[in-house]
Image 1 (cartoon, rainbow over the protein chains, first blue to last red):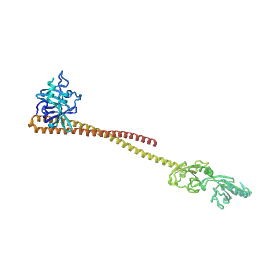
Image 2 (image 1 turned 90 degrees about the vertical axis):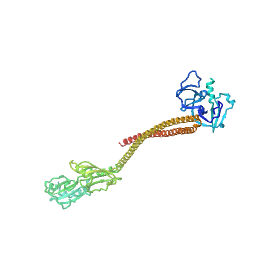
Image 3 (image 1 turned 45 degrees about the vertical axis):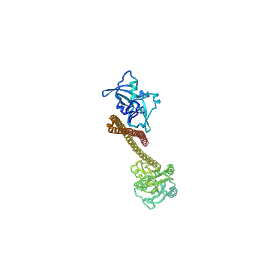
Image 4 (image 1 turned 180 degrees about the vertical axis):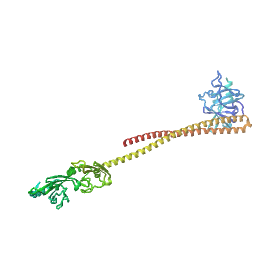
Length: 152
Length: 371
């Protein structure tokens, strides 16, 4: 099920929204969803790095995907949540507009982005899931970890 | 004194004179025994008591004139013959100078007003726009009457005065009296004014009355109209007072309604508060469900059953959350409608205030026009 960053062999997705756009991430990379606690800022960090939080004694970095993806900044909403990811031993919190559901999805419903298109930008999104009329962008969790933590 | 030889000449003169004297007169000859031997009465005035063959008493002025052999003039009061008279008695003497009888003239004494009545009454009668009835009475009966073209009464000369005639009142009190009589007596309402007439020489002795009966048709109509108007205005006034009372009732009701509406609005706000709380719980439940799903997924096959439960919890939370906007929509609807009602009640509050003020103004002006 979890053979590296390019894998789309997934059957359960956590679906959340960013600027009205639906994103999905393999449930096996998620740990929990919490209300956004107070965030401690760390100096000299990239803008998308919001700071760190204390989650039951564990210090977890928090990143703002909207900043990371260069979306226009929006107000903090009532439904803003912190999605805690478990990226192969590294815990990371991402701020999302709302976590809406858990969906099961067949491999057939997933369309991978062609390599040509994928190379134009970053590799954060590696596919699109189609459920009825909805399109859910599949977030590449390990690539995210790589981009954020290792490339820097 | 008259010589017995001149008597025939005197009688011829008297025959002519009797009807020439205004008010009429009676000429009489008496023998020495005060028995009437000759009489000439006017057409206008005559008295049966004086007739040929009748004998007067020793207390009569004729007797005195014969005894005293001088001409006597006496005013005879009404008490004696029922009519006021002026009597002149002249003794008749023979060649020897003995009084052998008397020549007498009797005039009715008339009050100046009564005497002039036939002259002024017809003129006066036509001077009243609604007509008038003028009359003179002596102490017992009508002695003159004058109706007008537009108004007349059935009373005739010679009719006895009745208990109800105010002439009797004037005679009794010796003062002017007047009386208003409604339409039941003469067909139209009238005002009767009656003046006492006193003896020309004795101002204490009442000899008759002069009366005027004036129809009061127009005046009475006006008075009735004004009374009706007054009644009408009173009716309108009381109706408006009722109106004002109900206007202030409406005013009070509207105020009450306004208060109730504010109560409803605050209730709606409370419902919204409650629904916000529901949303929070739903959000919390949803998060719980999602976290449970994550835990179930991490547990692998062992967590599959739990995953189903977690999904159901999440769905439930979605459902409860979805009721919140519905509640919000409903309460917003209530608020909107209630606000409309409030505005309307506000405007009717205003209208009822204006109505109360207007009816007060009307009542005031009616009271002013009544007074």
